[in-house]
Length: 449
Ligand code: SF4
Image (cartoon, rainbow, N blue to C red; front, side, top):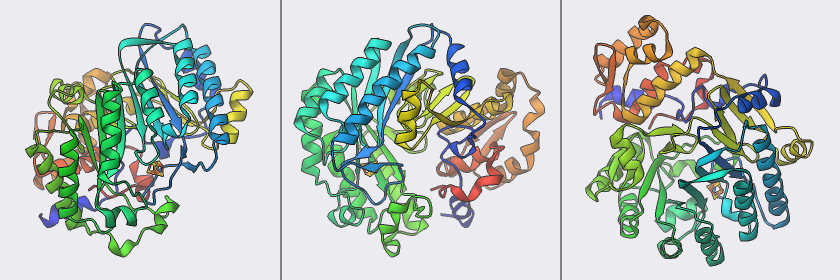
């Protein structure tokens, strides 16, 4: 690794699951704004639905999510009831009964709900929306707490994909992050889900964890490959204890340094490609016949709050506390405190905490960042034409782009930028050149690799 690449890798840059990124959402966006945005949607365009459950039955120390530990069922059941109310409230704001082409349950741990509550919520969705015949219905789960009864129900409800945070199988690493789940436990869940009819299985893996080495990660990958998940996401652990308080329980002295992190990420990526997975974007891998590999090949891959996605809907409706919604007019984020979120819904008011109305400049820059993150290249002139702005718009970034080119991270031809092989791991740094908001908030983000 060159010193130049090392310097770029240590930069704090966003993950760009949206643009503008969530820290730039403001309270100026009110429920009435979101209601207007929703009522102006085209009823013919399918939307996607994201349902958030902030509860978990176990606490993982590496976790950066806004979650609550659910020791009892009652608060989770109450939350599930309010979710159903919110689904009805959202549907009322829409211009007509709309179709859903993509549905995702995330968290937290959505399977912290009891099976009957999950079924009632899915019924609320079906009562208020049409789910297209080829829709993807996905749910995140935790193998430590997923019951066979829940697996059967997930199958009966027509889910097409389930994802698990596997992270790392080494017992010492699992203990250091408080996520103990032996391979047999994960294998059991995967096999039962497949028997229940859930064809798509996703695993998340993490490198850069305490006590983790290239050897432990490669052994984890060997065990994963044996279970043949359709998709594997490989993320770098972002140690930000000043933001994620749970991470204060992690022994910082056991964390690998940046050179070791890069070795882990590169060794893991090579092992996955050797095993027949297609590398997608910054951190995903999929079997060649998986829809994500096909979308990457066709250039239709997108990015949203879950990372890379095959979801092509322009609108995502977020349901649940903290969830983020997106329409062509802007982003909104729901209230994160579950009590305030529920009170707003009880009062018949969309539980919007903040958001951002998209300007023409936001849409243009968002498109450029999305293309770089999803395909590793972008045609800046074509982006200008699409947005109806002057082709000169990016010349203010000329100096930064020239430096990135001289350092071998990007190649430029006419108005087109492509990531080089060396630059690919730091695509976020290149995307950040086009981020008009970044300078004000740089310290909040994790390092680039
Ligand atoms: S990593 Fe997942 S299961 Fe663990 S505490 Fe965070 S949200 Fe819950």
